[in-house]
Image (cartoon, rainbow, N blue to C red; front, side, top):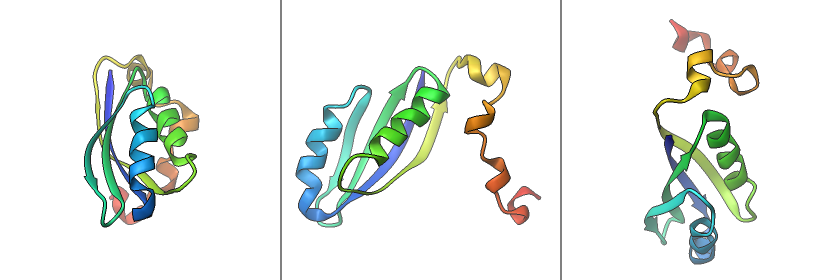
Amino acid sequence: MNISGILVVVSPQRVESMVDQLNGLDGIDVHHIDAASGRIVITQEAASIRDEVDGLKRIKALPGIILAEMSYHNFEDDSELLQGIPADLDDTDKVPAYLKE
């Protein structure tokens, strides 16, 4: 089981409707809402890394999302980890050189 913490940002006018949409998604729990800033903190449970990334993409694609970024990740017994991160999910080539040192 993979659990990720995700920060979602929407316009303050859309917070209530977005919370309803997020609560309607499988594996999503809303934990904190700052209506004034439009920030929503959620957790997502997924069976694999691929499912976790797909879930984040699903959230980013919702109408009205300004930002949705994973800020925390925990994984347990994910077979993808035993075989390495699939190439289509590995974006380490985008990491600046000074952070690789």
